[in-house]
Amino acid sequence: MAALLPSVEAAADLLIATFSGGGTVYTLGNGGSAADAQHLTGELIGHYKRDRRPLPTVTLTTDATVMTCIANDYSYEDVFARQVQALARPGDVVAAFTTSGDSPNVVTALETARSRGAVTVLFGGGDGGAAAKHADHVLLAPSSETPRIQEIHTLMLHMISEKVDAWAAA
Image (cartoon, rainbow, N blue to C red; front, side):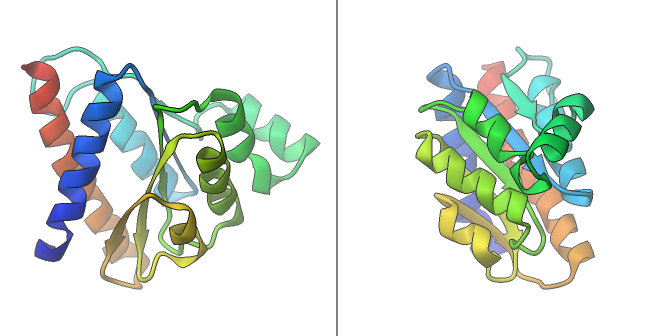
């Protein structure tokens, strides 16, 4: 974990800069990674440890109508990219959670985010898979086992939340 600290610190600084500049953070993932994306959003809109102002963060997995509309009318590969295309702007961050790094809908979302001028963050595992090629900031859990990756993702998102929380409360 010690080797990850500089990357985690940089990700926290990125979120602080994003919020300072009036940007929004968009999170996404599939399955357990969707839960991690929602977890980060909850910490940023709610609070981590301190009573402070809410921070503009949206999880792209939580609107069932939008998700099923896109999956039905286009494809499941497009469920995040289409939302990113509609919402993300320069000055925003798109943070993707994936244990494999190879989910087509996550890879496409990161690629679309970059094309829109948003900064991309990947919470991944192992070598980051195909998603790592489209991430400006890569936070990789040093494991290939899904449970271990998700545990480290939780630790990283808590560390990021701690720093952002302290900044927002100041």
